[in-house]
Length: 289
Length: 289
Image (cartoon, rainbow over all chains, first blue to last red; front, side, top):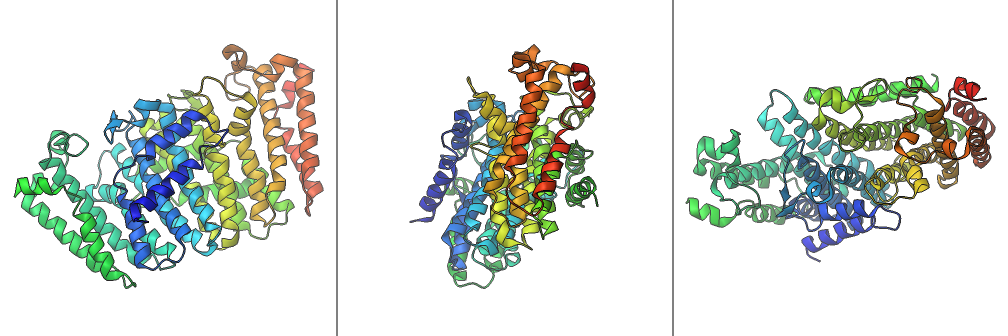
């Protein structure tokens, strides 16, 4: 099974485990809506790729790690879209969860997806108890306080924020979780895999800046030019397209170099480059060149 | 250390683990505010009592189980109080979290407390990996979909609800988690401990009905007479005080009988009765007699 099909099957099974008699129909429908169909599934694909490079011997644990990270990503989108944060009416080209199901179910959907992420890990951990604690800690720390996604989002409520810390927590932390959890699920020491997640997360952020400037509305599934409109820092607006593309290249080269020794090191490096090339649609770069 | 002091120390340590340099100050302050000072800590006390009756040999795991349940209880209160649900201005005699810190931090505080609950279990599970998966599953199922607290709350968004299922999920599920997790942390089979949690949860709900009818505003930390005002079913309004008190007694007797065989069975039964006697303030029952 190719990685994307494998992820879709695991996500489907996770949501299916909630859709049982006795579950409030609105809650299960909103949870499905929040997660399926998904986006590019970049984070779980990265997790699977790292686990594969480490020759992981326990596919159930790897699937659970990848899926838990995707569910947490979706949960953060549902809560970020709420009126008290981004007040986003649309997501992935259709109404956001609170627009489709109302605010109460949107809050509960995010909550239930967070819980389900940890439940998935525990279910899989029954077969590999020795790795469960580390895996759960990696995932929990990437999401909660003091420095996970929730902390990143909470910086928006402060008077002053350190922009690179903000991006690292809000965007980078789940990429770090993906690489570290992929390695941990395979029984590897996870710490050495942090840098790979960090570099990819930062590259993803630079790509986002490039898209924000070069795209037109409709090109990228969300409004373009928002950074300039809102006065937000953007590497393209500050240093130009060429510098941004160079920065992106540099980060991806560093990402590739950072990969720890493992059976599939070389193939993983190529995969990371190939996947990252889709961070910015090629036609945007051709237009800019 | 007495159980309450032990719980307060564990809760303090959990919140302290978030209050580190790098954490957005608003987030850590709101998390502390949501959890300390707490209420009666009934659920974690029950968890500790069951673990004690089972002669638990791993206090770190027991503390983590009890604390995770308390954090999840507090998280549910923070989200329930939000304007899109109960729109409660006060909680435990002071402004609710969203009134004190704003809605964005209230949403994030609930999220971060849920994540912290599972992180605590994983930290403790490093020393007892064999019990971690079951413990995490017990806790996760009591909170998430399809039949945990979140599901109970989601029934409020449906046209029709089964009231006893609603109460069992919204109120009972964390009592069940408390008894089952206490037993699981001690290495006992948890399933046999479900009935005890169920009976105590139902008794707690009947006590709540009694307080709602007999108390005056200010007596019980929240407005009285709400069930009649809102047309909600209440066992006292339906069958009278005497029948409600009899039902409460019956449930507590069944709770006591249901306790599985364990070294501290008799003492636990007495403790459950003693603790439950505080569910309804004695002066209310004297007034009604």
